[in-house]
Amino acid sequence: MVKNYSIAIDGPSASGKSTVAKLVAKKLGFVYIDTGAMYRAFTYAVILNGLNPENEEEASSLVNKIDINFSDENKILLNGKDVSREIRDNLVANNVSFIASYKQIRLFLVDLQRKIASNKNVVMDGRDIGTYVLKDANLKIFQVASVEERSKRRYLENKEKGIDTTYDDCYKNITTRDYIDSHRAFCPLEPAKDSIEINTTEMTIDEVVDAILVEAKKKGIN
Ligand code: DC
Image (cartoon, rainbow, N blue to C red):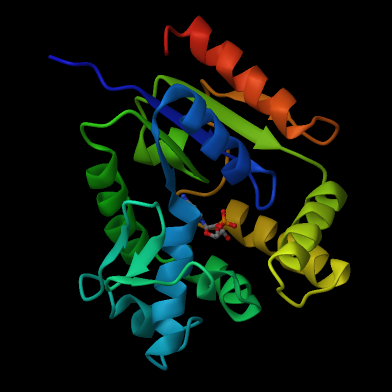
């Protein structure tokens, strides 16, 4: 039987997980799976359907009724339509933590995540990958950075994408999401016991990627 490898990268919002995870996946020839994009796509669907993201019952009514997947080019698809741009809007960013705190929605998306990851070598990033989604991942990274650095990164990233936000908007959004993500009852953001913490505040992207590749090599992943 061919062995599949999985690398889990967890950490708070804007700690640079997706940039790093994409590059690590590329270097290793693995598939990259952005689970945050899936929670965002669900949130976008809730808004599109005129449902209230703060109402668990209303939002959860879309479980099993919508299709969330990735295209061959790794674009996030909601019912077959590319929504990569829409899921980065402020309205989605400000509501996604509510959606991610609802158990039924998490179970629905975790199931999809495990299906997408089955029979593939993957790098998956999120909040609960090492603790829940892929508990047996070969390598678990917990990536952190100061809240100021993360707000700065998110602000610059939005600016580059033409999304209209201020540093203060990003700071507020990130601190609020940190709180909700780490205090929810089901699968809160926390490091897996067997994870390796990397503080990226003063590291370049390449340094973080190299550090992860060194850890991967130690675990025999190549
Ligand atoms: O990584 P991101 O900022 O795109 O994630 C969006 C939100 O989704 C974030 O507030 C936390 C939530 N999330 C989660 O709860 N579990 C995951 N595996 C991935 C994201």
